[in-house]
Picture 1: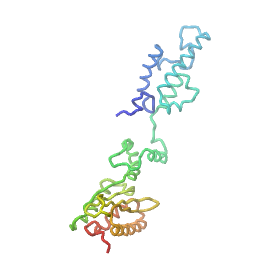
Picture 2 (picture 1 turned 135 degrees about the vertical axis):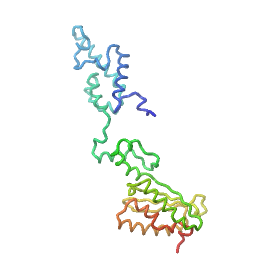
Picture 3 (picture 1 turned 180 degrees about the horizontal axis):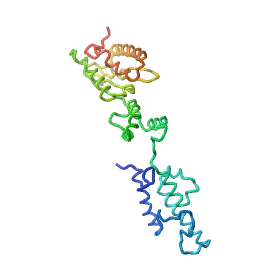
Picture 4 (picture 1 turned 90 degrees about the vertical axis):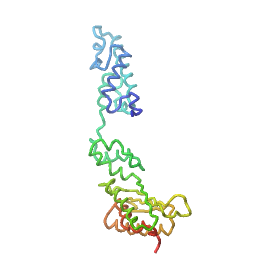
Length: 281
């Protein structure tokens, strides 16, 4: 779907070819004989008004035409793009067009240093993005996809749900399978970029009789390491889980892990995820 800028018909980076065709039609409407292709190359009035003696009056009239052409052109240029044109070019239709042709070339992000590109990615990738919200820039090239995916995964708050009701020992593998699927099928080479995962528990009594089931919020940051926040979970169960996370955090530091620590917390002690597994011993 076309955006507001595209629908506006203004000149911006990348649409000069389409815009210049539109401008020819606009100039013909305003000036009749003049288009972008027959404006004087060097501001000589005798080229603007051929076969006529160059008197001061006619020279002034020719200059006025060139200025009027520039005025019409400026109306059809995006303000941010027009701001790049030197002030001395803005009243000369021919000079203005030549300058705009250069300014309107598509922005080549891959020509920027990688540090600057990363700043661009950080600006356009919103925090709390959803897994299905893959932004268009990730489809531009393999290099840009490789550069943006780590940041993309770092800004997603992943969620999973598991039923730990009953005594079926096979249920101890449910969280492990969920975690491995996230790591192997979704994150793949970007597991260390995982920063947030919420595990929703079914079959575990919520604290204070809350209708909302317990949720475990695992987060990782370079400053705070692995952290767990429990919502609607009884204090005794939360204490068991916090002790588990403390052990995992110590191992993370030893192994120098990052987001992988969240996966480790989910799979390293499967007995937690069976009925009664979070009871204090």
